[in-house]
Length: 108
Image 1: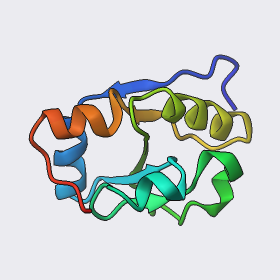
Image 2 (image 1 turned 180 degrees about the vertical axis):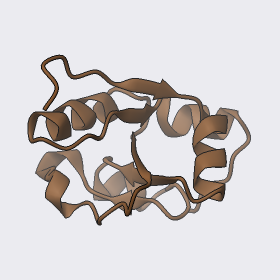
Image 3 (image 1 turned 60 degrees about the vertical axis):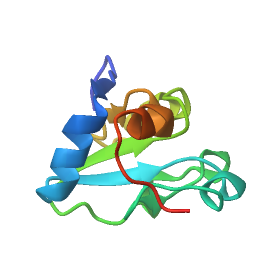
Image 4 (image 1 turned 30 degrees about the horizontal axis):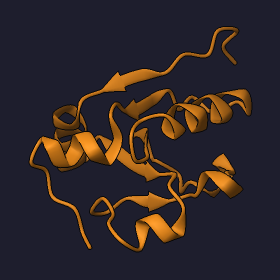
């Protein structure tokens, strides 16, 4: 386990490419009331209020990338996962707001 956990910022374009190419798993840590309104296509939902990195399906060699609304909770989730020994160090900078601003699709 790393002594200095860190979180890597990924752009919406980087995440979209990683998902398209099968290199990433997107984990949305927003709450059910938020994801019911709008969500990322194909994201795994693990709400931060009940966050348990063990609830994330085995990424099978893919990078786990956390996402939320604006990019704050996704950092919290990444650090929490690292504290528990998971090497999940990436998040979608700017969250779903940046995702939509980049013109990427969401599901409603």
